Image (cartoon, rainbow, N blue to C red; front, top):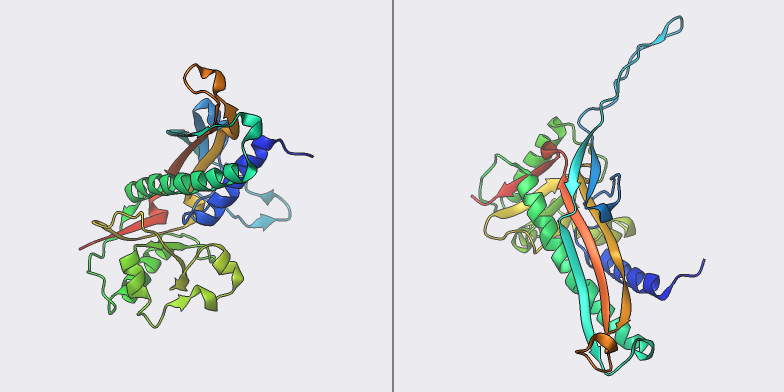
Length: 274
């Protein structure tokens, strides 16, 4: 099926976002929700309990249990716009290379904003990791192993998807740790997620939007970090010549709505500075 020009413009930004974002969908965040984000709110399933497993009796079958999936109402609290004027062109005459350049710039700016907003939600929604020992090249590995143990005791799956978001300073410490394995040594699959390496069962991501004054790392699992992220108005080139203000001009316009939520505090931990 042929795509409209608006859909192609929006897809260009979406592709760029997948490359730029540190906290990617499917890596740091899941996209599981019900409802239409354009309505202003969605429902996110909260996986507080697991399905009960019983013995099977050939005569009487298995004891029936009741599922108890609860839902968290998540307000779509971010509504961001791209609205950049391109002077001297009507909508049909804007060169493709100019549109591509501005879309590339829009994706970069939008990614940075999404990263910052996601960090705010993750830092506020995480459980404080009790270890407040100052991180050094001699203590970094022990601290990461400690949070790994804490997550395992909280039954957070150790399925290869646990993540560790670290500040640039903490990443520098990890590079001095003999236990740290660089992403280039782990294969294409890890590299494609944007990970810079792996340690103690965590895929490591350098994130310069973490609050440097207070945060050293965030350790979590994507099953309990949700992102809602859609275009409410696809990107397009809008003729604004008839606006009464702009003469012979067009604009690259679009609106993106999104929200983030942490659905289980015991699946996300924050290591704060001592």
